[in-house]
Image 1 (cartoon, rainbow, N blue to C red):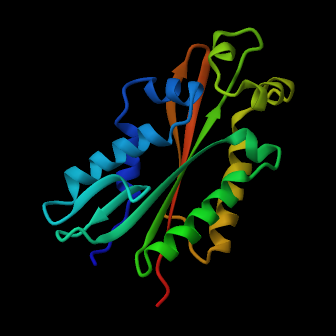
Image 2: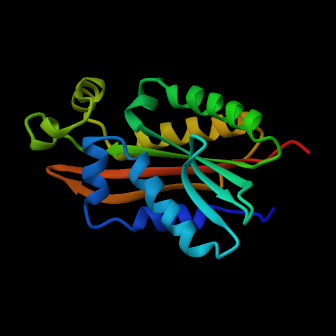
Image 3: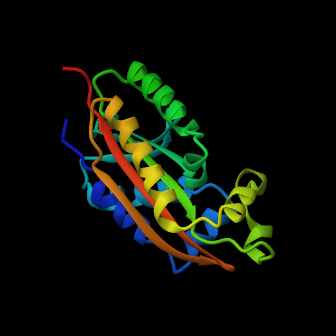
Length: 202
């Protein structure tokens, strides 16, 4: 099976949105589906005629199939928010580990690619418009405002948690990058993208 490194494709997908589009999507909902769709299209354009790129194939976010319809690569996406790391709520780690175990059993011998995209609200005003548009405000608003959070510590806490999770899997990060995605209402936003691959056991 041909090797596949999603790193440049994930970066291209993140940069493919219009100005402030991903900021708005990240403020008002989960972002894994729109990013997944961009990523799938990037793979469709770049992998050539011998690869079949599918979305939601056999309940997988993305599958890359060979010309006979057999899976060569499985891609799973998860979305989170950096405030989770700051309060020690690393639910995404358990979810992604369970997903990895399930996919590895269902598709033995196939590399499992995992992408975690994490919304970071860099500033949120107590009476601003973004507060009313924010998805799941009860989970993050009090913390964001009370701590007067700033970029560095929260992002670094999240990145450390991701690196530790991937290290426990025995692998390494292939992408660890924070993208400035613009502003939604009065909230400047970033999205951190992490990507790793779990290769099948020899």
